[in-house]
Amino acid sequence: MSELEASSQQRVPSEATQPEPKRRELGHHPNDVAPPAHYLDNLSKIWLTKEALTELDRRTRKVVSSSKSRPNPQRRRPLTRGFHRELNRNIRSTSTPASEFVKRCSLESLRRVKLSARQGGPDLLDLRGYPEPAHPSRYTMSSTQSNRRHKRGKRNSASTSRIYPTATSTAITKTTKSSGAYNPNFEQRMIDNRIYPDGYEYPDGRVPPVPGNWEAIQQMLVKRRPSLSPSVFPEEEYQEFKRANAQVSSENKATRNVIPMIQGITRDERSVGSGIPFTNLADIMRGKSHKAKPDVYYGARPEQLDPNVRTQLSASIVPSTTETCPLAPNFFVEAKRPSASAAVALNQACFAGAVGARGVHSLQTYGEDVPVYDNNGYTLSSTYHSGQLKIYAHHLSQPNGPGTDPEYYMNQLRAFAMTDNRKTLIEGITAFRNAEAWTEAQRNAAIAHANAIAESSHDHNGEDDDDEDDNEDRE
View 1 (cartoon, rainbow, N blue to C red):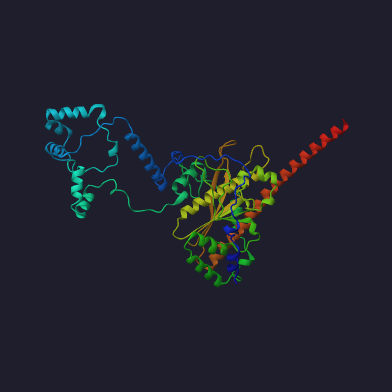
View 2: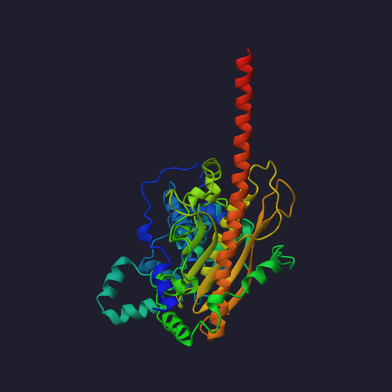
């Protein structure tokens, strides 16, 4: 069995092995959930996604319903045969100016026009969105005429629907696939909350900064690994990877069959989570609640962190109420099938990376009255889509000074066409595994710092207790 085959069988933990039991709160935090209307109204730019169009329909129905419920609505004159004949006499074309229409009206007709024009004219709200008729005297018929026309057969009715479309016949019948929660409106919401995806530009043309340790991260990614040298990585394994990639027809197959071949054999399975929603973490964006759910993430065992720190920082570093799930995640993987959207994978990685960067920063600044931002990156993410592996760095800073909201940045580090040739595949796998090892070291360093602060606090409290005991003994 090759190394790739072995890794694909051992690497990603099964969702079934990490069940979500009855939820037990590890830390309480308010969940500012807002209705859809509030969520969309707060966006600086609204994209016409399925969710936005559904909300528009809901509001339109509400307006129409309220207009129909108003007391004593003004009624239009019924469209009888006599009224049609009158219109035909007075209106010779659809372009007849109003002045010509008035000139041709009888005194009785003028009286009715003046009566109808009082207080702005009749209520036409129920005609909102209705197509303009080809001829106003012919576009509508009475219910009797409609029944008679219906009996003439399908040909005439079909012809009528083409010439004079109704609200039903003009509705869009072509269905479009929804991009889900990570649509363009979600990306806009991230930007409005100072979470900037890779490639973002400020309105003035500036681009978000790269982390201060950018060069160090780049050098880390290309560090050679003896297990991946060309001499020990045969052409057969490259061909095996190409076959696995060609058979990806779903996100699950990409996560289960391809990603493990990139990961290799993990040192500690309990540090890897898969398909777990981060329901315990506090919202990083204002308004409508949204929780990250990366395909794969890397974190620390819960027992690595001091219990008091774990409780105090629960809403920042403990993703799930399942106590055995890895905490303080700082390396995320998002995989998509070829027909899926690469933009969705980017948004998912951006959001998860921001959440991870916030968690690592909370560990690094544990015990500080005023958190310090060193503008370095300690969190990475990776996306895999149609044979393309991309690795990103995430960091946060406070560019507007102390006491202001932080900004979260995402920058692409490398990109690899994994099915191009064996050399490129080795480079991509090397970068991924180096990223995995490096993020583990950064995570462990942040945990060690928080543990040291907690231990120092315990010792200080213990000395105070001893002093109190000594004073009581002397008394």
